[in-house]
Amino acid sequence: MSVEERSGGICELCGSSEELSAYEVTPSDGSDEQSVCLCKVCRDQIESGELDANHFNCLNDSMWSEVSAVKVLSYRLLSQLGRQDLLDMIYLEEDEKAWAESGMQSDDGLVYKDANGVVLQAGDTVVITKDLDVKGTGFTAKRGTAVRNIALVPNDPEHIEGRVNGVKIHILTKFLKKS
Image (cartoon, rainbow, N blue to C red; front, side, top):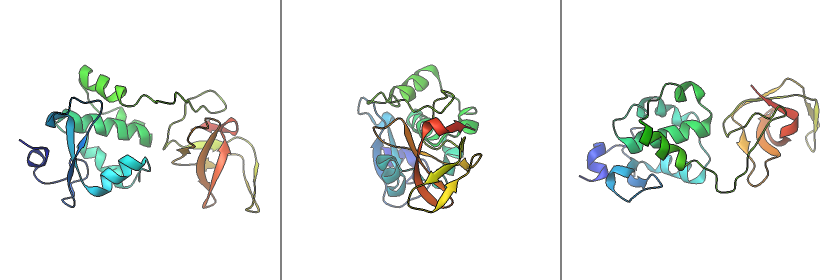
């Protein structure tokens, strides 16, 4: 049975029936059991690494799939989005959890940490610990301001990217604490 037949002609994450294709959940042996049927929207976001948290609210349902590849991909995406509430509920067999975590290991070995040494992940919410002048904007990011849904700056573990007062800025991790 092909991945599209198994899925019933819908994206196994969001349920869309538009522009479907098989997506291999790596590392994999190439079998259909290790692939997921995805729509173009889900696939593009996963491949680009720019995840829309609102779109991926669908993971609340897909994480309960009986298909291991769907659960593994859901786990990885929930981790990237920083959805600890859902990660605490997901059930993975030992081999599924090992598969999920093996695909999450960073090739570059970079670890992003806040001022207290807590590991930061994309999608986390952080709080600014010091008033920061934001160059080129004319405002100060005040201490105590929450920055939601952060992005990690590639190849620079001392910076994250987030929105303050509607402006996307880079912030030094030493001035942040995870909330």
